[in-house]
Image (cartoon, rainbow, N blue to C red; front, top):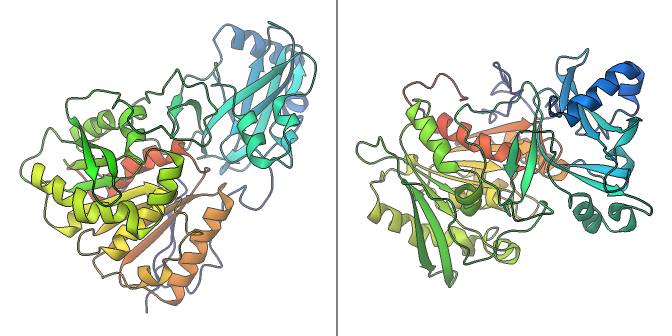
Length: 457
């Protein structure tokens, strides 16, 4: 009996793939940071850089000539140093504390591991040792003058994280993304990161100051970004008994019925992540076959938590209403193999729910950071039909979710499903900085265009 193939990508040109007859997952290689504690390297720059170089960095930051983070190779090619820098001009008061809110790395029990250290007059830094393919969204929060910073005053985990994330983007970093609620974040892409060339620049809500962690937009918001092939619809969700925003991306080069991808948390993609532009570029380059993409809004935290992780919620709405509606209004293939469902977090769980309970409607799934702690789907995945394909992804820094995915794969090794189930361990946290580009890569993997050459774009 074959063991489902757990696939560990190193995000380089040659991903490591475990053999299909692997007896168990106990030999699965985890990434730096999953079990080794904080990646922080205190005092590194002072120990390795002369004072003149640090002063030069400060002036380059102030003049906009140096962009952060600064990545440096290590003796291990799988790891790099990431230097986050702040130049303090003393206005309106001297900087007395600052914290790096990098996704999944702020530990409320060890705040010092994320706080900037003063390495020279007017220059502050955080140095992390991270995987060479690390991807993260981050923000920087500063404190000036006397007293404790807000993240040091709070005592509970969530208020501490919110206070640490309340600042803003890194003004010395030109790469900007967006999170679920549209708040802007800076993006850290280490040198070996897999970033599709077709990935469009995010369009965050610059009026939303933050924090970026947690929180979703409210219902009834304007559809935002306009694009000629992104059609906005407001339907009444008969199952969930409320209005629902949908966006359908219509490819320009379609000839005949196309595949369909269904994407949870669709408002984020449609309004803040310029998904239509990314799809345009990927299809035009020949990396991605023409396809329709249905983006489904999840709205508020409460509604999302009630409707996404349960079979009777959004999953039933898609099966009974939205998929039939899409086929009646757009030229979409009737083949279940041509329908893919995607989502992240609760959306990742919802993608698996759809595939497991409606395998006659959906043949493929990309489940990113699925919340398997909420619902055990192991028995359902074992029972999937042979022509089903599942890609599960998790970031090494989202510890509980990553471990939940490993436990699922261990179970599948003992009870091999007929379906193909792959797992990718990625260098990141619970984070749109990799969910967004990996959706584009995943679509090209399942629906390759004429120029596609092997799994990444």
